[in-house]
Length: 58
Image (cartoon, rainbow, N blue to C red; front, side, top):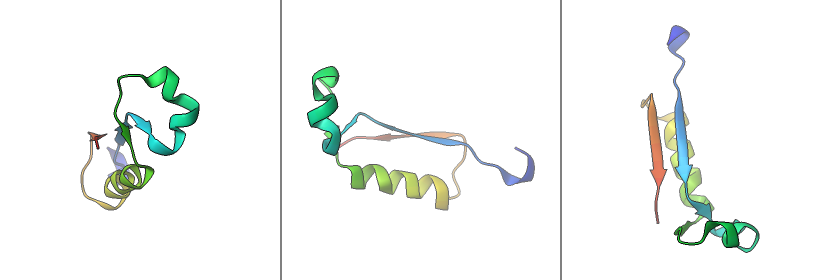
C-alpha cells in the first residue's frame, strides 16, 4: 500500500464484558476477554504484520 499503510482486522467472537447484552444472539460462541482483544489490536497496530485477520479465541 502507498506510504506504508497497513490493513489488519481483529475478529473476536463475543466479548465477555458484553455477554449480558449480546450473549443471547451469540449462542454457541466462546466469549473472550476484552483484554485479549486489546492485545490483538495492539499487535496489529504496533507490530509489523499487514493484510492479516487476527482471530481472537479464548
